[in-house]
Image (cartoon, rainbow, N blue to C red; front, top):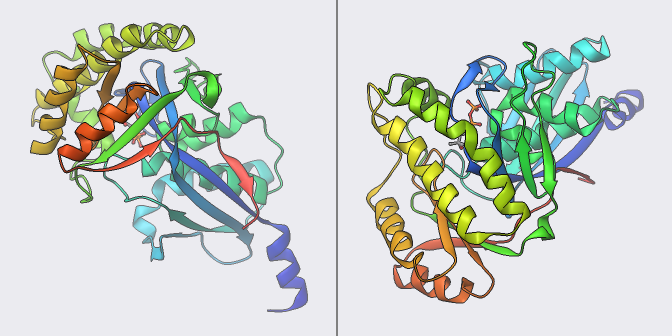
Length: 332
Ligand code: DP6
């Protein structure tokens, strides 16, 4: 490589770290499939302990490349990342290609939202490597093209993804509703399985539309973001817990009653769910399950040691965390 090529590579390179997020009020249903535009607002929190680091380099190479944990992603699986990179190319008015090298500190496709942290880190890195100076809202809207939930990993702490109404998705991005230290809750990410889920969220959402309960679900779930946001802002654990658990059950209810049905639960998922449903009457604890078998248990600082003992007694593997920050640039 000549000095000039080397200089050009460094000039158009940036690295970012993003955290996975878990939904308290779920995004489950799209009004536009290719732009990942949701039907209603959702609420999430970033998980400090689960992160992805990505380095983006714009070069004069002939094609884009994506390498995740040393795995070269085949071109046919790069549709979503291409959407993001095409958009950046359009904004820059250039024909350069981007190489993205990404590393997660947790398993992929197991319901631990690697697509969220991956999409957010890739977007932040690619935007900065292209030397674009964009507001956070626009970076969040770009991250949405990779995976809807990635929009929520851009802002810090507790986030709300506004569904928006514009056809081009320009008003569909996430904002922070509270910083990570707003409410000192403890999160236990229980790894029920490290096998990839067999039905993607995209497919699960699509199929759920065939549930006879779909219309009732949309009407009810559309109200969840306001209820859960209020509970978070007021630090009202009882209201939070009730709404979060119900929202999880509603999402899985439409998935389970789809044609053909979608079941993300493993036997251990049910075991944990039943345990939490029992103990949540006596202490501040609740749980949520995204599109996978893993369970995220949420509790306050006082109840955390008791909950942890229960999790250990059940022989489960877990990662303990607090609520995390937003996507940040790092030096690789
Ligand atoms: C159950 O963001 O993975 O985790 O936009 O199709 O990539 P796509 O879906 P994705 O869906 C996440 C679904 C969920 C709920 C949530 O995170 O809100």
